[in-house]
Each structure stands twice: as C-alpha cells, then as structure tokens.
Length: 119
Image (cartoon, rainbow, N blue to C red):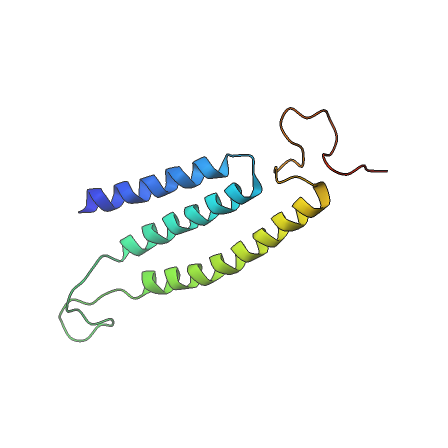
C-alpha cells in the first residue's frame, strides 16, 4: 500500500511539474495547485493511519498525531487563497498583454507584445 501511495504522490508531482513548465498561465496555475496537493499528501502521509486510536495521549495505548492533519488543513486554506490570487493575476496579465502566454508574447511572434501597441 505504501508503494501505491508513494507512486500516486510521484505521479501528481510529475503532472504538476509538467504543467508548470508549459507556457500558458492557466497551465501554470494548475501545475502549482497539483504541486500543493502533492505536498499535502506527503505531509499527511507522515502522520500514518491509525485505527481505534485517540487523537491525544490517554494512558499507555497508541495515539494518533494530530499535527499533520492540522498542517494539511491549514495548507488547503492557504493554497485556495493563493490559487485565487494567482488566477486574478493571470486574468490581469491576459487583459494587459492580450496573450495567455506567461512571457506576454506568443512563441514565434515577432518581438513585442501581441494584441496591443505600446506607446
């Protein structure tokens, strides 16, 4: 089961990096989101899965560590807010540059900005 989970984290990381290296703003946003999910899964996996264990130390029995779950929950909220902000930046860049490319220029276009003339 650990191999399957580690392979899943690896594939999510690979897909996130592949999308991050593409030239479009939306692909970069999706890549960053997938990388955030991969990190969340990795942090969550450090807490291990416990059955019938108390979330805090009570007596001599096993207990589940609540810290990884708290970290992942916080990371999800921060990641959602950051994704919204980056999407707004991408929309503003598309409006200003007339292109969805991260450099503001389409590949193969003659130098300058596509869509608008700058004075």
